[in-house]
Image (cartoon, one colour):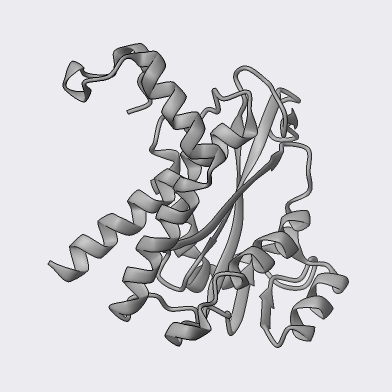
Length: 221
């Protein structure tokens, strides 16, 4: 809902300061990221994660109070903003999320997002999240990135500047637009109110976990 800490319902049984303190402790401990990963593993166990194709995209969010990982947004008249990076599977499940300054080029997020995703392999359980092909728009069209992806044996389907229309990739990439819409629907994420990027990333990870959990409930109950 994006409500303030002081507006938390009394049924929670704790004060606003206690709720906020526990959120900070859990955020620093990486609880929300592990929660997201745990739900993804449940989806994978049910055969509901499809990494034959993954889709990468970025969305701008205004940063109301500034803070780290913000910068003048080129799409919002230079106002302070951040970028929300999302990597989804072929069906739009958010696999990994990240945040950067608003004046960071989209393409700078490709390597850390792919590398972060690949660290989630679990060989002991036969789990392998290595993508077979990556789809992205023209913002990621760089020769060095194409070479890097091929070196990792990941197929490249990135629109070429001045050659291909981004619209031709819509049949595959539309799922990430829907995922962005899901995440932006959480009022704590858009606009960004958190000055500390760790807090914003924690809320983003929690939102991604909720998106995955809703999909798990819908497809398994």
